[in-house]
Structure formats: structure tokens, C-alpha cells
Image (cartoon, rainbow, N blue to C red; front, side, top):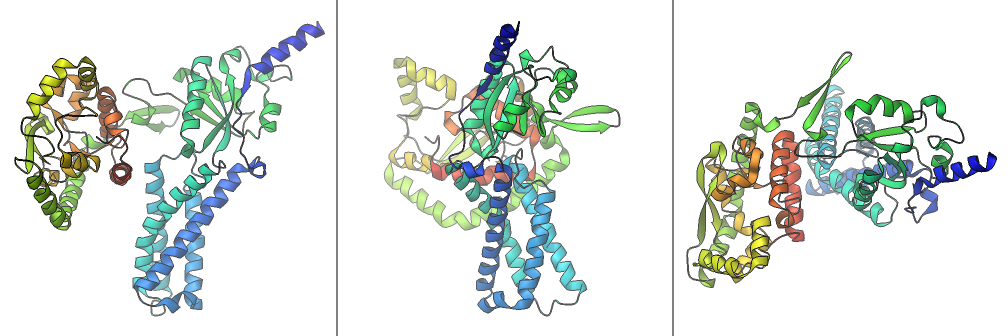
Length: 491
């Protein structure tokens, strides 16, 4: 009897699969969350100090930094900023996506600066402090602090000391792919250390947490410094049962729902109606006020861009004209808002007889035709000119679309404008697509660009419409710059 119990315990212990993802620095184990917080605080203090230094140099008052009165006000500011960041969950920021992190950093920094300006005004100390220094410091901090978070996170990932150790609990078929997802995306801040099959716990109750039960993994979790569990949800009706089962074992329990189909939990907003929970479907960009705000931003930014980019646009036009016969611009009919066709403007990157060349190639090469059917693009496109390859690599051929933005035919960020024959490829997502203006860049372009299938492209466009915010647009624009210069997926 004792032998049977021992064998059963061995089998149960084997079901707790340990993944060897230990940090190379053992000093970090057991207190990794504190190390992550400490490193981010250090990055913020360095970023703020750099902003203050650069602001003083711009103001041409380098000696102002050592003035005791400035040291006092900026020390108070730094302390207030760290408290604001901690209050908004930026330390260590695990579970925050990049858009929410950017929003929290910018809003917290701006509020802190306004508070400091208010304090100096109320205490009538404005004669001692240069308001220009404070304003320049604030503007620089809005750039330096997010950049500092990004650089610090990248550095810690490279050193393999970023990421809170977690155990993933779920069905056998799904927990391993989920573990691989977090391993491939270390910036998310979760480092899988063990995988537990939840199907072995279904018959357990909270009172069954005995030493010979698979649910009693406290000892193993403590030995691996595991205080956080990711529990995969199969059915939303199981939430109460899952929480009750694991909340007494782990300090933090995070419920995970994989995204099936076009709609996931990220497209829903939780509402609390006292004893009733509501899930409100997001359709942020379909709100009329959101569209007015987005249009105002588009108009201002596109006009500003045209003014500053005019010399570059002129040089590109001359280069195209000297390279191959034909016009400088290429106008292509695309479907826009309300299903209206418009002429999208681009720099010409193809030969004059491009359509004929493509048709002949697709007819002769079945593999090439399959690639075209999947992506609506070709990696080695025979139609593209020498100059065109360079322009496409850095997306410079898209710059004339700023004129489309001014004419309200397009937006800076939005769903990629589809060709007339691509309407059926969008399926049910086409109804959402035609309610907003297509964009020069969007989630598709920063999520693999030409390496992303057309089906996935339609899903990303639909997700963008649901979850739109000004911060999401800012994030996409920033990531577009990174993707373009990284030449990831560009051809």
C-alpha cells in the first residue's frame, strides 16, 4: 500500500514539468521582481538627470544644475515622479502592454511637472527658477524616460535577468505553446519555469491540498522562487473555480485566455455593476468624437510633414526621373472609407509595363502564384526598378500619401488601404474596414509587414478599430520608424 502511494506520488511529481530557464546570475533568483523594480528606478533617475542636464545646456546656463535651489526642486520632482510611477503600476510593469506603458509614463510625468509648477507658483519662488528650464526638462523627459525603460529592459533581457519566474497551469495541449510564447517574448516580463497540467486537478477541492496531492505544489514553487501562476482559461464559467483553487498557493494568480478567432478579451472592457459583471465590446474608432480627434491630428501632422519633407520629396522625384522612363508618381485605385474608391498616391517603384510582367510570371510559376495569393506581394518582384527597391526598403515610396491624408482620403494610422479585388479576402471584417479611413501605416505594417498573411492582416485591422486610442497611434508611428530602419519584413 505504501509502495503504491509512493509510486503515485512519483507520477504526480513527474507531471510538474520543470523548464530549465534559470537566470545565469543566481544572485537575482528569489528577488527578481525587486531587481527589476530597482533597475527601472535607476533608469528613470538617469533619464531625468539627462533631461535636466540637456535642458540647462539648451538654456545656456550650465551652472544652474549645482545651484542648491534647483537641486531641491528637482529632488522633490524625482521623488514625486517615482511615487507616481509606482502608483500607476510601472514598477516593474509586468502585464502592461507597450501602449499602456507609454500612456502611463507620459501622463504621470506631465502631472508631476504640473504639480511642481503649481508648487513654485504658490510658494512664489518662480523668480528663483527658470520656467523655460522646467518646460524643456518636461518635454525631454517625455522622450528620455520611455527610451530609458526600453533600453534598460533590452539590457536586462540580454543579461538574462529580466522576467519574473512563473508556473503555467492549463490543459496539456496548450500550456507548452503558451510557455514558448513567453520564452520568445521576454520583454513581457514573465519567465516560464514550470508547466502544470490542470486536467489532473479537476477533481481536487480546496480541502484536498495535502502533501500527496498534485495541487499541493507549494514546496516545489518555493524551491523555484515561483510566486506567480499563469492559469489558462478554457471556459469563462470556470473562473471562480480556478481562482479558489490556486489563490491560496500563489501570491499572484494571472488568468490567461488565448485569442481564438477575430475577437479576444483585449477587445472587451470589464464593467462592474455591483454583483453583476459586464463585458462591453470595444469599437473605439467608430465613435464620432474619436474620428474628429483623429482627423484633427492627421491634418496637423500631415501638413507639418509635407512642409519639412519637401526637399527630400524633390530629390526622390528627380532620382526616379533619371533612373527609368515614366512618371514620378503612381496612382492606384484603392477602397477607402464608406467603400468609396480613391487614387492612392505613391512614388513610382515599378517599370511602365509592370502588370504585364507580373501576369506572365504568375502564369509560368505556380510557387510564385501561391506566394501572391497568400500575401498579395512577392519577395523577389520582377516589376520593381533599382530605385524602387531602395524606396520600398525604407518605405519612402509611401511619403506622397501625406497628400491623401490632407484630402481626408487616408489617415496617418489605420487599416492598410485594400485594392478593389481584395474585398472578398477581408470576409466579415470588411464591414468594419469601410467605416474608418485607411492609413499610411498600421498594426499590419508593424507586425511583420510583408511576412504577415492577408488573413492575419484583416484580423489586425479589425483589432486596431476595436482598441484604437491616440496612444495606440503614437505607439504604431514610433514602431513604424523602428521597423522601417530595421528593414524587418520590407520588400
